[in-house]
Image 1: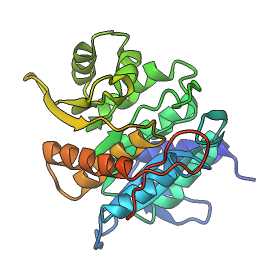
Image 2: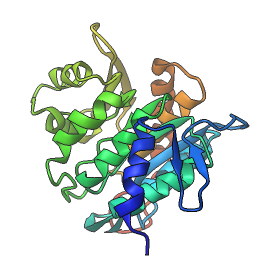
Image 3: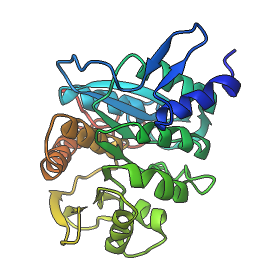
Length: 293
């Protein structure tokens, strides 16, 4: 069985840039992100949990990235027991095995962007942060703190650790209004976005479907000192499972394709709205986005 006692410190050292290479047990060495860029499609590294229903998590990431012309690479943070109604239990990936996933994958394939979703455990944050410190491309973080059915996913002050350790290394954060408040402790969402920008995040897209009551949903993109860019979308009739995963993955894919922030975010919202508009209800709970036509 794999153990973290010898491997994990070396992986962390490579990912944080403190060492250029890692000597493996067989004597060979590898270098992080130094392989030649020979590709025909952008590769997006998706870090998140497994959803058996297929509506959210890694499955949502894979479908979204593929639909937008990219290739999804995956690191699984947790297994979940869930359906379209709610999560019943979460089994985080052991830290040592998660680090091993990253080691094996990244010595072979270089991603063009990173998308982060469910972390599953605060214990994974140091390894994820080390990975980000060694990466120069766009990073999109969807701070998943609660399931649509209400199951709390923010144990061990996860929100505070995301804000302090991960957000400063991210190109874009995509919280809903409740998540923005929880990340910062501020009730005013614009102040919350400004707090995240001040912490070092490149841009913050605050989505509003979780609190919408009228005929439209207005999302807001904050990128600097100026006021936010506002995006208004017709409010759809149902409750959806995996909308946040879809949106964040679409943003990451679009950024990897070379789109600017405003264009990438606008196109990602359009893709997500269309996927929700085509959604189906295979179970007794929320509707699932139809990302692949």
